[in-house]
Length: 471
Image 1: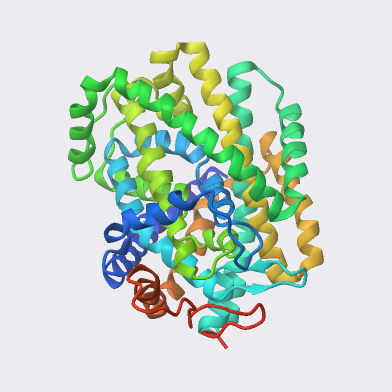
Image 2: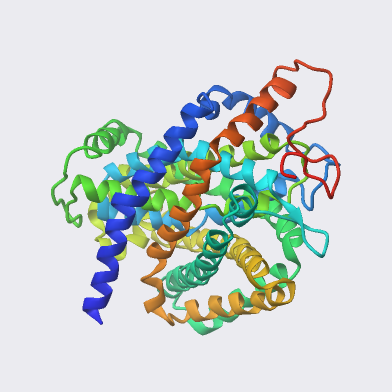
């Protein structure tokens, strides 16, 4: 069994380092140049059209508001990976891993933007009158590749099951370690909370997310900023470590075992991808349900999502761990406690652990909520609405199984499944780049530059049943 596990781990490392990483960087670069650095050039406008219109009423066609779609996707990306994942990346890849997380995020802004553009363009209504969309729709309708669309949905359905178990286990392990709480009881509590919300569908998930996600993110930011301010004198040294060891190996120091450049690249890109999900194709599921009259308006929320998730939250977690020296004092096997250690330098051991435990719990709740919805959409595409409704209970069962540490062998395949769906999603993204460019240019001409008084768009829908650019 150890040989099998090692083989899976080696294959995952190779795939993520030499295949997925290269594809993600290439795709991000392609769209960055193809869209003329849209995510940077128009960033002030993106802030204006997202945060600046957060509370504006919207009567456009869609199932949930643009902000609810954004909060839902941010809820699933801003999870345990922002706390535990960043610490793990630094523990195994060294400080340089944080640099590669930034790279995948800066390029990932363009990638996620493009995913959402295509998800919005090719979305359709299901039998319940709700908008649905995602990679399987733009693979099938944009390229006509039905088998590949089916494969994407199937692999993602499996990946979500494994991911839910890992998320659930991360919080129950943390709470059991901090407070000696029973894993079975914690699992039951998680199932009940998630079940009550998730069974209400995307509308209820959106309503909960747009209240809970901003609160927990702003509070977590405040706490980590406080830690960094207290250790402000360590910032120059910390940034030197990050930029130096992104390109050079780092030797062992304290509890840190040392890392090669390839390890920093592998763990930085893998955790960056797993954190902001740019390139995975998951973001369009929630965004496709949003109320909007132009794909670009909704896709700009995707740019903001990657920025907040990785450039802001992950960076703050990483800087807190590095400036406090927690990365050298805690070994890799206990990396999940690095952020606890960092926070304890300001809030004390007990309150530092309590703070991380509470926010891991909230992060996991919002992440699993949206993952259940994502999983349901895969089952709906593959097998129809009735099995999709039933799948909610299967994914709820995954929460309990993960909480008690069951089926851990499946967890070993998480990175492989992640790699598979990313590769499948990247192919249509590369081939449909002209459509993304045209839709973006349409928005720039019609809305940003206001070259015409005609506010309608020929690239999106004006009627529920008609999508002019597709049909």
